[in-house]
Length: 421
Image (cartoon, rainbow, N blue to C red):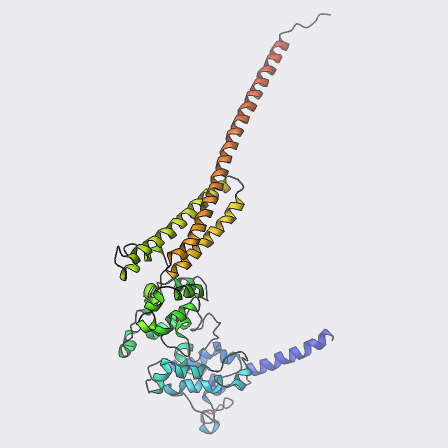
């Protein structure tokens, strides 16, 4: 097929899309743009709306005739005008399109169409159905007239913006008072490792929706907390399930799984300070001197010991590498030791010292091996320097001797008598 024949259908489709995206006349926008105050805002905001970008405008949601300049015709009920929906009707109002596979296929074939059904199962949806108009609906999370694509960084539901979007309600003491819900979750989350990762651009880091869900949002129950955390922390969850703590902190026992040690919203970077020391989490259950406290202290000592040994070896190898010595093999080997440290931290969740000691032992062997390689390289560097110094000394002596010899030759030559004619 000739190139021009290939381009014709593509150009035709582009023209058709342009015609859909830009209706010939939109009296709604024209009229409201000319107004002042709040009634003008929708016409200004909709210019950045994803619906507008797909050829949908005011009348597609509110009804009416957008081709007429006559307000009585444009907003005629005979033309299907419904105006602003009641707050309690908003989810179903949005679902007229978003729950229709046939309609959504025209714009976003891959987009899910079960959001409304999920919303009805959520805490928000159930309370709204019971007549509570204060709960979140579609517009509280997605905005109203300037709705943006989820992948748009300006969207309120973009991953890095979700915590603050949820916080608009859940950090508001006035709104949460009637529900008895604490309002410190957002502040706690802002101190967490998850928020720190999100701020660094890791959009896969957990936000509110990752744990609570989005359209079907509800608090994780005690029975599901470990499963929620285990969606990301799979190996940790598997080890925890084998531990002595799993049945103790199970739902049947009224426990809280992972959050007993790690908390929920304000999850901090794990460290051995959680095992032993003044702020040890273990001390909340295990009194000092008890077998549990001693085991926790031993595990902390192992992890810190291996971590320090690897750092010491890394420093020695780094010094040798900086001096120009060949230690690349040992540096690569050191990565295996770091892997063992990770495995030890992972195995710690079994709370079985024997399981944890295996990677600790392997890691310490690597730390010793690489340390010796670094020390040997530094020793070789020193030997080379001594040899170089000796060589330079003899070269200097030789040069000096040659210099004196040449001077003597020059002196003896200048004292000879020239022969007479």
